Image (cartoon, rainbow, N blue to C red; front, side, top):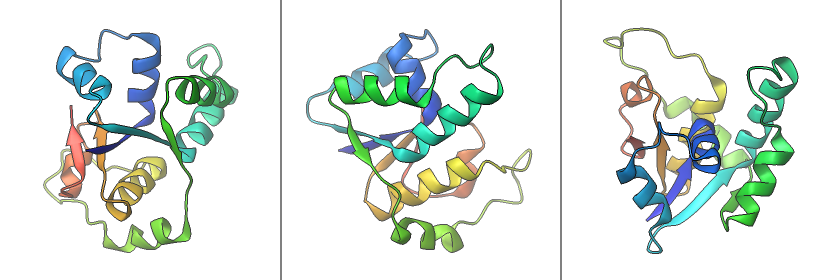
Length: 135
């Protein structure tokens, strides 16, 4: 299975964060799966780090270096990914609005590339996309 990781899952994986449960960790370390990270996550990490280095000490360079070292594959943002934004529909029954443009684009990347998007954001399943894997 091809899996692309949400930014927080990448950070949790590389910091051995306890919020990453054993089942998800097994999924990410299973040799039968190919794990991807997005250039969007590097961008998001760099922005968060610059805005709040005390709360988010993980620079984009740090994250990129760890992903590369661990054998993850970089997926760059392509126009074909962006064009899928029009296909996303957020459920009116969701408990709150979802506004994160990075998450939306990560869903589009997963959709375009026939991947699963691994996230722990409980609002993302409200997009109703088969590619979203909530862990």
